[in-house]
Image (tube, rainbow, N blue to C red; front, side, top):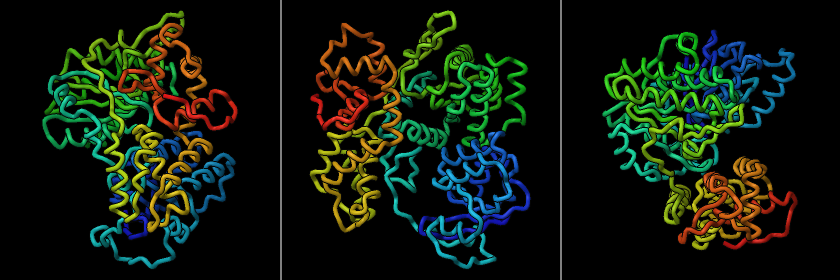
Length: 509
């Protein structure tokens, strides 16, 4: 397929023309994007299968999810006016508000999406003779895994105890890596996957099971999503493409309750080295689907390393022992009883004060814009190193505020305080997710007791308290005393619990 690369103010853009559909589902979209050699791609409408434009097929959502997960941006050029589906036009409208998937009617409009006026393209230019890409300004990332070329970031391997993880892998252990939402779990897993494969002692695959969330207790639908996630990951990380229809055939032959185990067995038998498997977003698995995955891993465990993964990391918000699956008969099965082979539970660390400074100084080194010295203790009090909050404050102050975009002006503590208020009062995906959790009775009861001075140990189950800690609302300070995790949460939690705006009140820690 003809591919031309062009420099833009936002990096290299690949322009692709095809007379036949080359994007037919999420996996083909990912393969296509990887083959272009760019993270921003413009393609003509004929390259997109018609099923994409029939929202009921789910192809559009699958493609969009792949783009978001792997940091690609796709602009489709064509005439979409002849489609009569109102939901499709609404979908196009909403996509065009974002950045990962856009629809335009001309090449000129596509160029404008990348900050360019109309330019003449060299008809004979190809990937091999494209000019060296211009380096765009990096940003503080608040959505999805970090990408070294695009985001200010610390080495993800510093935030995990990689020596301990390597030791557990060498011992062929199955274990847990956990942390609250949006703290860099996926970024760390991807970095470890890359390092392990580069070391060459074993193969490593990182699969994300978030797509199984919508299956709920439907085990067959959930396992189909889990098997498809492994199938995609095996190809993405090891370049191993399994036979077409392998997912449906395994479920049909062995039932959903054995299909994942059999897929892993068949896969491992063909490898010349042991397999290390990372399962990300374990929290997306619900009820019987979660039980089935854990039991299949436990059953296959004795066949490692020749015929089953040598080592498995389960990654999510909670320790697997703390999952409580409510059965139709009223009984409760715990994750620990389904997965009694867990060797360790490791926690991803938040940023230290020194690491916050190191991250912000990357921006100073790249742009010349400094953060005033009194910014650092203020950010520490507001975030206590919570990675999403650390990045969000800097992004708001240095990229969203008009005064902060002037690289000759320093970022001041007043700007950071303003950024904090904007995050709290204007709403963000991260804080909105936490607000949703506050509606859960077990979360609300713990935090209301905490804020009103109740005795947590006497009135509430320890599991409920641990649940609130796991989700990041509370932490234990240096004296092991429970406190609200950071200054932003101290402001946000009482407001959300009260259901009404209150005058600013800083809750003591």
